[in-house]
Image 1 (tube, rainbow, N blue to C red):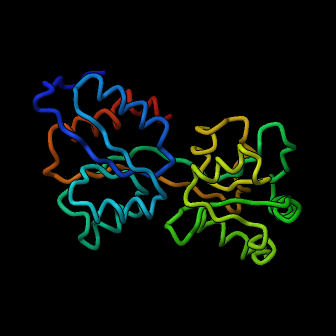
Image 2: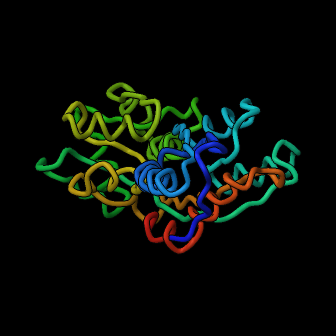
Length: 233
């Protein structure tokens, strides 16, 4: 990994707001960057929507990783202007279950419906906090006609990281979040993606202003370069 070495006298703290779906690889890359340069990375993770809002509210924020859709919206409405956008990667929504527990068959719409009705406890990220998968899941249960039944036994988590904590601690029987968040927490928890009818693919992108510091731009280049793409993949 080629990065610019900087003396500690000019070390900089770089603040990045990022969707929780990229947390584990981003922290690994941040540690590498800090060791190589002497700069420090302040990473704040949340849902894609909450991340976007927090970035816009923080004048010290340097980098943003959220959905490409939100970045495009920010470009259109002028809240993200004079900047550079780089694609980070794609993930799909799916379901998780505690490792070692029976995994339901969700291979088609009727089996998914049966699984959602049969489990006692479900967790998913709060749509009100800008959760991409949480918003999508609400549309699914409405489409299936089981919204009331599911919400009665649902826990609305702040984000996908918390959803997976509930799953891995056995506090819920099913978790609904990005598959990237599932495999980062524990690959053995993965049940699978939604049936094709309800498939959701999300593209994450990185944005920074044209006037970002050289240190921030160097970290962005690491994230979107070969080493970063390998870690994210």
